[in-house]
Length: 424
Image 1 (tube, rainbow, N blue to C red):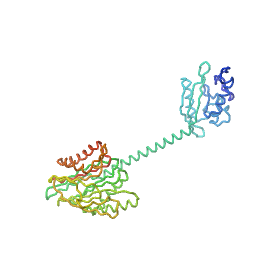
Image 2: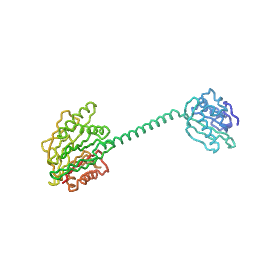
Image 3: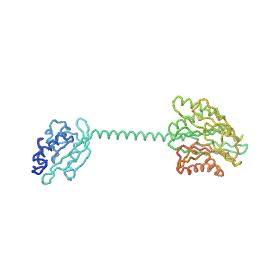
């Protein structure tokens, strides 16, 4: 079939005949209606021969090629207008349609133009058949989807960037977790006591609810017979809380001169945190507990900054109680809230076989499925029942008891538990 001019649509393309008196469309009006459609529809319509040369195009398709009249396209191919990438792909698609007789419906085509432009169309390509049913070319309809495609590509690129940043943040969080774990004591002092043959043994359980934690603890050897145990819980359990724990570790090391006096240490730490929080404008605080165990003198000095009271198990007396300030005495406020705050130091006896268990509030604020809270009283009850167990098992079973109560495999909040046993 020879390429046609851009005038009236050829009958062999339209495949239409005349009407009769019973038809709704009068004779001859069918051609007028289709030509009107071709001239006004915003989608590009085209017919091609077996060599993929244009036989007929509508006004919209001519506008896309930036030619004044549709007739200027007759006899030309995509290679006369597009870059090689799209022209070759379009030709291959049309050859496949003619070979198989199967249409390509709604395919997305990336159009590359010689001037560097890139546009996108949604195209349907169908085999063009003559009156005998023989394939003589193709015809199709293309809808410009450039704006939509650019938005999709921009969204995909934004998603890729976000995924990349998320991956970087996850890697940084993993590094932060490793660094935070490295800040925790890797080995503990044993402090053998020549006077009564006693020694200290430590056990620790660090269970962050997220990648990083707001909980922190440290054990510092003060002398051959004395050790300092520090534990804290920073508000929240995110990166900000983890950064504060790093500050507190530095403060514990920098304030070693005050390590012999628990209340003094907490007071100086509070002063440093108040100053930092005031400069940053952040509303932050931390609970903390610091004790000094002296195995030579058989006593414990301790001070609390609104922190949960540790468990004190006395094996020789057969008692399990909280290491609390006592009647009529109050612990200090949380660190970082008040510049002028008092942190009293208290004292109690420490005997052979005693166990001290310091913990953060994640252990006693766990809720069950029915939203009942595992309280400090519940923890004390469990500790009394488990008291006969060896120290390591005693502490491990305390954690298991809370998890059984919650009916979960892990805690909702950070949990830190540090145990110290005076070994005979």
